[in-house]
Length: 226
Ligand code: ADE
Image (tube, rainbow, N blue to C red; front, side, top):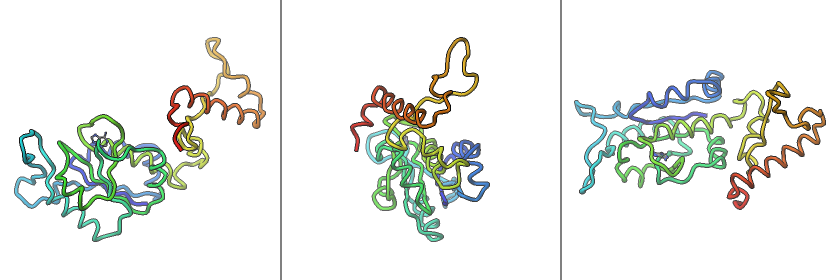
């Protein structure tokens, strides 16, 4: 899988994607993550990427010309399955969407910044707009990093024990059951007896019950969704 990201702040994305599982996935050649600085696609002396919004509202807007140039250049090199724009007014991001994106070959992500991008970009160049939640970040970079992290760990071969993605929260529509490790008792606080029993069938049953109970208590909305 290849992921290209267009941004005015590559530093904000570089670090979170250069650690642990995501770093290893790149090293193993399972995914390639490529950052493109929007300023490299400007043509003026000052390398201008933004301008004042038309109308009375204050705020800077990312200009269409460098974005168009960057997207067209990247599109001339490969076919993208999705060209994503990160924005608080996009489609809510979920594990279901992470699963869908993890099956794609080539994804391009354009990070919003300031007040956003010239809306013509969204009308003509973007195939999907994604929000990571109902709150506003300073830019779409952290949202892009979150999307990439959650997608890359689902790419086959990225997790050493493939089943560990299958037991993630949300993967089966439920929150994950609680997990414990040694010591079996600390400060008088005990690990549930069943986990020490060695009876895997009973343990699985307990985990399922826990997952269901936690979901019902903490996120009942998940049980109502199809
Ligand atoms: N950019 C700013 N806020 C955002 C959000 N909540 N999701 C995605 N991109 C954003």
